[in-house]
Length: 72
View (cartoon, one colour):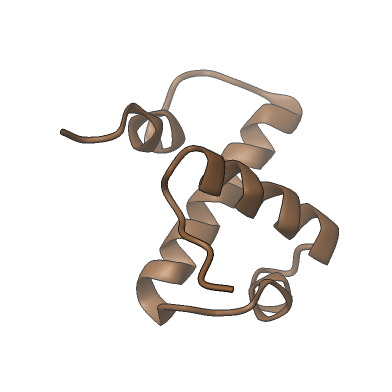
């Protein structure tokens, strides 16, 4: 069974503004993690040019959705 959240993140439905930006950033985070494996939030923020608080917030949402695991 595939988690419905993954479809939500990669869907191309028409959204705009902050919701669109957040969805794009979540895609970028997942792509980065897929390519590099484990990383810190600080390194992820630097690689994607996102602030650490924003990266933390997005990662927490992805963890809540079951798409990312926290390895400490």
